[in-house]
Image 1 (tube, rainbow, N blue to C red):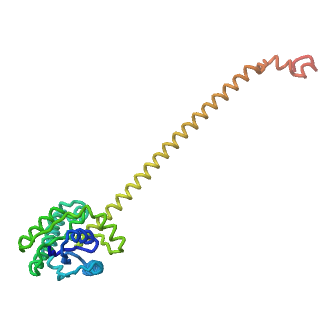
Image 2 (image 1 turned 180 degrees about the horizontal axis):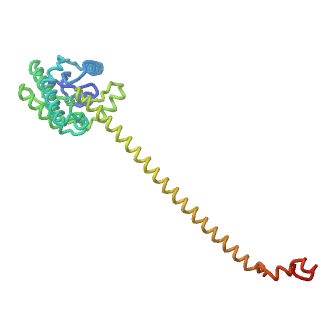
Image 3 (image 1 turned 90 degrees about the vertical axis):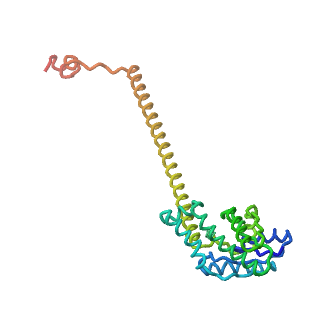
Length: 276
Ligand code: SF4
């Protein structure tokens, strides 16, 4: 089958290309990603894809870069969702439901263009590398690919490549490919930053809780040691008293003398024979 494969980036293209080639398809890659922002990020992803595709002898078509088209559709949907979330980027980042409509609009734009280019250039079918990522909406990708293909009169060759994500990650690292840390649009960039910040704060809170727990444990141990020390001291005091009492019993002190007795003990009494 003569296939126009929509590619979002180099790393995500590795496994789909390998698998589709094994199936015997005649593949051309289309880089149609108006979603990517800023422009130098677009250029970097395209350069990475091109360099690898050349080494694989796969032709690459670079679609016109029109970020305004993304802003008019997916961008507007994304801003509406962000507004509904009270402008809380962190919430949008951690709640996929708040991103789904925006990503659907984004897929639609890219697949419609892919399908139109495919129909215009005589391709039989379109496919996409987007379904490699477990962070995408796989079913939505499937629906939008089918929709775009049907509208343009070409076939849709959808495959769920998620089981090959780890292999794609491993191979792209081995090849030293540039690997981006956000999906592509400006909102996903801000969301990824918000999520990283959230995870950092969570890790810091966990560390603080662990330290607090250890401090409380140390305090409890110290209190237990102090109690044991006090008990030992009380025991030693008691034993000392007992020993003193026993000594007293064994060596009783003479009883104190009366006045007459003290007079008798006085040598003056004996010198003068009478009390002075
Ligand atoms: S997160 Fe990715 S798929 Fe979703 S709108 Fe942004 S670039 Fe498109």
